[in-house]
Image (tube, rainbow over all chains, first blue to last red; front, side):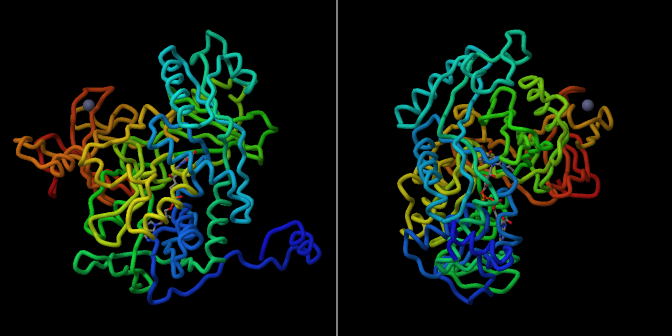
Length: 415
Length: 93
Ligand SMILES: Cc1cc2nc3c(=O)[nH]c(=O)nc-3n(C[C@H](O)[C@H](O)[C@H](O)COP(=O)(O)OP(=O)(O)OC[C@H]3O[C@@H](n4cnc5c(N)ncnc54)[C@H](O)[C@@H]3O)c2cc1C
Ligand SMILES: [Zn+2]
């Protein structure tokens, strides 16, 4: 089934009762060429590009719950590529270019909206760092502008730029091609597109063990039995450490709660995505009208998909200082995800010491924007058995060799 | 918000504390003797336990002393609090 104006018209005549399921619900086969562990956006995108770009015929995505029920559907959907260091900028810009054609490519409206991303500067030093990042972005061919306070106000009339503000705004960086997308739609769209190319998406199938013989992976034990696999890719986000431990691997990763919340729906009032590194808050408005607000990580390790209230309070108070007119908006829902954080705030994508076992994790608080790019480079890595050139700097052993890519303070904010 | 019992000050709100991550990581006595992998393991690699986890906390906005906590990373239940050098009641650290 292809989505088009005609299919919508045809289904309207039958009162939208005859749309078929977007993907099959197959029983697991006994053997696959490639098994992907984790049916989040990254795992599904990997499967899609493996089938489409790498010509792999027999692929399964194993998901312990339902697809897209993890961080895929819990993030604040910010997409941008204005990272400081070349390695990160190149990877996230590849992803940005894939976003720009994604809805057409997978025939699914992911509601990618390039409304622009503002990263606010509150001090002179913020402005100097911003100028450096804007220049670095431009040298890498990434759109970036340095704005003063008046220009910020012109884009976001509700923002308080008075010099007496609690967090005075000196200026901002602006990436016009940044924005957001519909997070569920991205997981569903990749699932549907992968399924239509023959990928088996197997939900409620938890991987409980990884079988290795003579240093080579041979398959996985699951809640639905043993499944043979010639190659296995681990894409388990918050549970990456748990899954990697099944292969005897230890990771430079810790899992933390990360929280977000949305307000009651309002008339359009926030035009772009506004982020502030210094106060660690960020806000945008969904097409439905709710304000989408994200916090920083909780300081402790946590697999509970919830965090502490003081973290939310610490986010909302500066948001209200930046946008005083929002002070009486009521919040509708609040939740948490489990984010896999690395010491240098950059992902890990590549091979492992186990032959034919591959890893993709450590996207932490900022991997939604990378969903297509991550899938793209990981698919090539699995198919060729060696890192895609864009992924090569993000090797698992960079914390041993010392070749860290320190995006912590460097990339605008952590999302 | 967690309710954490400082061994010196008693139960206080989490916002008075800072979490110092995994506990009982011992600084290598002779760093020069370590391989790069061993040094990286000490500096960057963590156990990231799903379940009961030994971690260190400091009472930043109180007595400013460090101590250890056994906390479940799924339920967040705090099972034991003990001072540096002590073993938690009824168990291994
Ligand atoms: C509150 C919040 C806000 C965020 N905001 C942003 C943002 O604005 N912009 C941005 O770029 N990023 C953001 N992120 C980060 C982003 O969501 C993640 O980096 C990204 O979603 C991770 O990749 P994924 O979608 O594949 O993860 P997930 O959707 O979590 O997928 C991992 C899957 O693996 C499955 N799994 C785990 N263990 C097993 C097993 N043993 N067997 C089978 N399956 C298993 C899980 O059930 C899960 O479905 C945010 C995250 C959170 C929590
Ligand atoms: Zn104390």
